[in-house]
Image (spheres, rainbow, N blue to C red):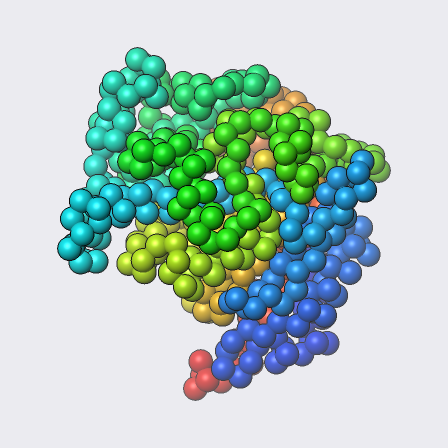
Length: 460
């Protein structure tokens, strides 16, 4: 992730002033001091940045800094804290991926208890590469009699790592009008894409698709016999003590606040007027539209607890399934040969500072959950402040009018980017000044890079 040049230079100065050795030990381990993080946020705010959300940084199970900033609910005078609940968007995907692997594992263990890990891995791997038809056959109610042409082509593995070719329903122009209606079933969402043709041959390329993760949640329900909301609670959230984490089956934030007073409201900045006051997000998403692709709600404390349980303590899955989950299954961008998608997570395979994580965005909220495995560091940033969703829809409609005939392709994305930068330059600047995750991520990168430069060949 990139940030403005002035801030990048400031971060480098902080590293020099604080001393790299106070952040990286001689053994090459990260050692974080709260004062360093606080200094970055202070300067970010002095430069006009707005911090509204929660930040948590931890070394394995030790929390180094955990603070809330700004308002969770301005009307009630409720401030953000590490216990405040936020919509986490696509960070939900790693929970869905883990739930699928766990449901397959539990099913096989119950059928044949004497299987060893190697045998279980082989069976689960085979199941992941079977067609979706084996799990959601033609007569499954999810299809409502409209059988996809690709039902026998697409596999669970391809759904997990975004190589299925199924169109992304949230990128469809019809989704804007669809999302304004309060639907009662996730099957309504499936209808948006079930009859569409594949965008490419399954397994031949990577293209992010929320559609696949909607289907994976339904597969977990079929395997386990539980509704997905129940499955998460019984098998993941409750056992891990994630008391602030849940997946609503439907409803918008205004509805959910009645039962979850700790839930932060989402706020919006004006895309076109930097001086306009912040206001509550005018258009919340109905959680049934996001479902297992992005409907989970959580807190900074709980997400740290999840990272420790998944990566450190094997409390979520046995190690051989965590290893399978974290394999570099698909290259995201052929031009960036070090960034991969695993199951519900992206992996940046830098030789000195590998990173596992995911971002999440949903109207009113932006979230980051990163894990640096060599150093055991967790970074959680939860923001309840994003661009105005209604204005974003208007922009999407404008782009569709101008470039829609090109379909979904890299050329269209390039032209759209150029058009927005030329016609709405202030929008890009606002994105920088409202996202306080960026300078923190750069801080980690620059600290580590400086340490690497100062090390001798023998130390490396």
